[in-house]
View (cartoon, rainbow, N blue to C red):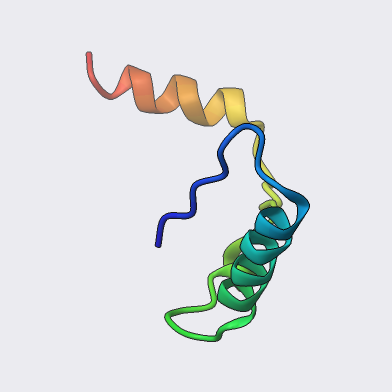
Amino acid sequence: MVLVLKRGATEKEILSIRKKLQKKKGQKGGVDLSRHFGTIKLKVDPMDIQRKLRDEWE
């Protein structure tokens, strides 16, 4: 879906586009990936992991 907001648009046109965006945002569908966001907790220093992986190439 593509919505175009042109320079000089009236307030009515802007509100119309905002409503369309909010409607699209509120629709459920697809896969909820938000549970995969965040950080991981490591017991090893990330630089040590990187050095070890690079040493495997040689």
